[in-house]
Image (cartoon, rainbow, N blue to C red; front, side, top):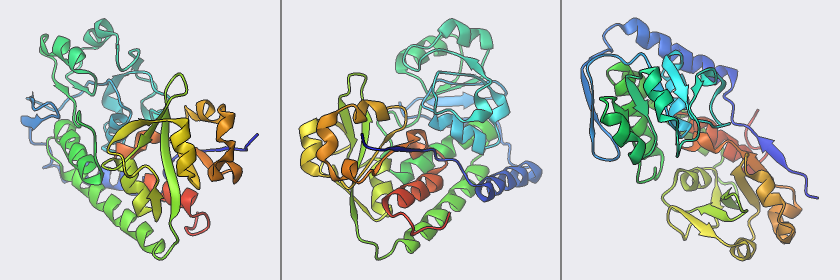
Length: 304
């Protein structure tokens, strides 16, 4: 049996101190809240808030909860849908069921003044009751620029403007550039970033995804870069691609390792199959994600 490792992307103490310093700086600035605000979401709908939201519900994905934590708004999250990827700062919020089929009655009882994420069908129900809903990136986040645009929108909604979001972005861009510079000249490893369905069927992150950008910026080669977005792939196709490293959502790792036919893949033979917290791919912690990718693809290049 191949030994496997699950790597959780947790920010370092230094990184978290930097994030909270930005939060405190902005709160002390005093002039950052500029309500009312209007923000367009991924469905082209204009979200209007007359005042700063104090009761926020998140219907998934978990990238929204990471953004809210990093924007200093975790204490305003009153409800979340089920996800083991949610950060600990929001796990005391009221559970609302699954993202695709949340408990709408419970959401209404929570009296939110802002709902982030969720399906179009759920939004239709909530909007009819006058509850503000936002879902960015419904067409799929294609890379860091889409992630940063989403972070700015969330920042505007929860703080009144994007000042703190812009500072988080600036910090993240500097961190990512520093990591890339340390990897300059490294030989490219062949990498597959996968997700598994409930029956063990596989999906690969292709081009025009945050995962593809993270692989490339980690001096790796995405073996499924010839695909666009997230596409289903067969076990046979994965074997043909012969990746040196496989990264898969930590919650889905057993579904991959149960397939003994994959033991011929270099990544399996060399024990370089890693479970990762995929929620941060599209979150405000892209710098943390890139560092994790880089350490897994090129162990020993970056200091702990």
